[in-house]
Image 1: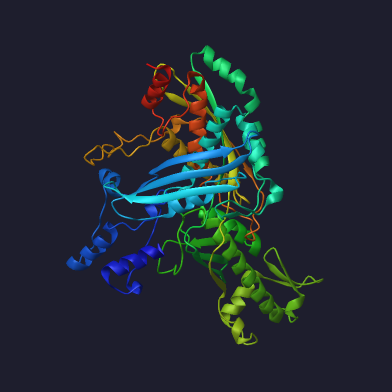
Image 2: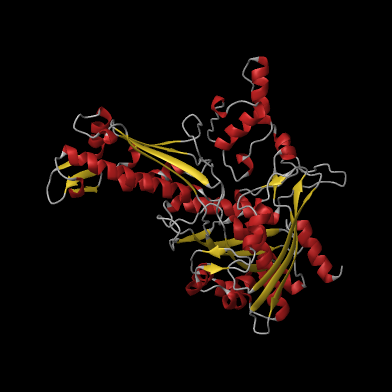
Length: 547
């Protein structure tokens, strides 16, 4: 949002203070909607030119043709292991299509950084290149670069297990980074903070009833269906725009106002941001107001991207709350005629230790706002705190997902019949919101794995420019998910938050395709490219059969 303000000002050649950007509910972000597209400054330019308000509305075809696309990566990769199944090295040659204009290197950079994933791999060699083409530009999309990286390593592990005769689970179990090796630096130089990867995998295997799969496979076979099960571990890296700011003000009229730059686009910030502030300041939840989405109020902020929101906001809101309590103690000391060191704060009240003499948070705010004569000058004015920081430490959510599919051998149609996931988010401030984020993220990954494709013909014409031609998952495309949240607090921030918005997407590509290939493995199929449409699955079966 703030970046949009600066970008529009640059295009119009005006001072940023003359530009106001207002964001309201936009129905999701996922990277694509967070971009500044040419139409926004063009509409502002036209309004100035003709002296009237100008509204631009993109039709669906416009968005398909010109909005940034995502995930266009070609990879050649190899995994080396010894006779006992110990991973020795990984090598990959990666080519990312940037489209006609360079918009972002983030997917390629982040993908390379975590391609070794949660495994002990002593050596790695990656060659990562980007190319320009005649397609629409590609940019960040939910969990930018990480789903592709997890797809590569998890498919390599499954291929290695089948070719060398190892058990898929056992091979992973042997090579997972143990918790006592944390913090762990992978062969690319990225250091993971902490976590228990083996625990996550074992938990998910139990949750998915991995041991009961043979019976389910036999039952599917009796119905004429090929059943497969897939496993994928993952690690995420969350950074995003590094600069963030929050301002918290305790208003005498009995409200607490939080002004923050990270913009909610459906993640429930109004709830999850208010929860910890309510606890820290002892203020009822419904007396907290979140102010966002208006550059006249929000001066600094990086929006919502790369799982940054709760982690950055939690740190800054915590510091602001601490500063407000510290100032409030001093003011309460004057009101209660005692030293600030003797003042305790709990449940929204400042109390003289060992007595029943106390004053409420909002009374303290009123005294400061009224500028009582006995207060020192620095304590007069709003009871507030502003906190700002440029964050340089990443977060590393991780987890394990298991997927089961049934394949119709006559048509190649794939049905996801079961899906389980364990995601370690460090700390879940609101577990219901985390679950919702995980479920939505899984569906986005399933869409790419099974059906979504920006299809260009040889002349560069986009053939999937409407929802008549571009398939997206619907409610009947997936089963009810069985997901649970792991909470091993990250040591990198006071709340222990890692992030919870992108974990579902990150392993979904690999786990769905691993399950499909497992279902087809007895036919001799070793790989299916995404999207695994019925036609592609059908052709893979026929090719393996030699027909």
